[in-house]
Length: 468
Image 1 (cartoon, one colour):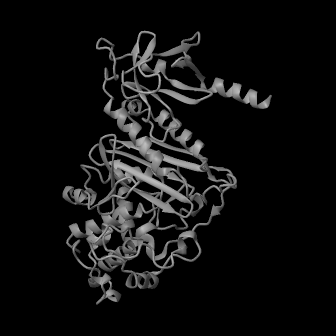
Image 2: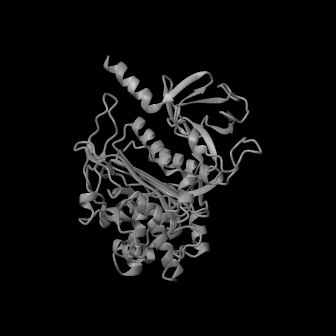
Image 3: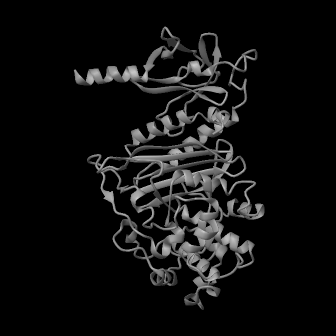
């Protein structure tokens, strides 16, 4: 790992922030990886792989990354198109004989990839999503598709796992080998993604995390969720992987990679549909990839939801920054954590140059020792972090899902830290005083006249009060 890159993004703080989010969410376990410019700068795990046994979660534990599978399927189809073995405007009836003469048979690969085919999402009987039945086989998949028109082709964005299952059948028809065998040989093995599988198999079964239900509204207990294979929906939701493999996969789809031609990569990543609904975030989808903007960077990636596991990967294909967060609970805040970590990394990189301290005096030395100001502090009202990100100091509340909600960039001004001036309800513009031990270590900070003590000191006092 490059020490310069690691210093910029502060992987130790990233882990602490993830652990805080996970702890407040009371999830069993979180696995996280961060890649910057081809280097994995963070590969970490927090919590347990199984709440019943208490087995500690490791970085080599494997998760169901579920709908991340759609990225792999989209790339597999795109590579076949680049070789001239199919066209994105081909229709499925040319590859799946059971669909000849049907409306769904006239759906194109592109419509399926972009979720504009108008077919059912999971079928009329989708209790396999709560393990009430096996996932559909080929016959069940095709029956659901033939009986499942909801919208006209291209009428609306309508997410469909069934359509991606159909893409898996088509890949098998084009290549002459099963979908799983093709993606292993064409994608996973050449990229060295040794912890990634298109379906749960015996080679990784002993490293798979246990999934967990959501917490009950009456207590914090969760039900364990059994493992299951995904049948004909493997191309939609079958993949298993680690956070480290997922950020390496993302990097293989970034600018300069030879996995896809640049024009093909741009086609997959650009907006095919924009989904706007009242009281909901605007969502954007390309061909197998979701898109969003985080801290001024356009990122792409995918989420994954499987019985007992929620996952999310975001990456900037131009800047070569990737974040993957995998959780083993159905209410795991994977998207919140991945988005927050990406924001922290992007902010660190954007302020990585010396002398870029927000609001700093022009004559401040570029090699100022910012590390002597940092730490985590606590009081009756919660937590505050003084953290270095790139060449800047920030005052951050690590409980916030958005780490920069209410955050303040700080400049060293003599023996205090000074936020940049702006309007607001809090103690805006007031200096942050840092109280130090005899050795110069920060022991407390005073913000708006209120003291917050070093978190380990405050926790000792809290425990003493609880025990009294």
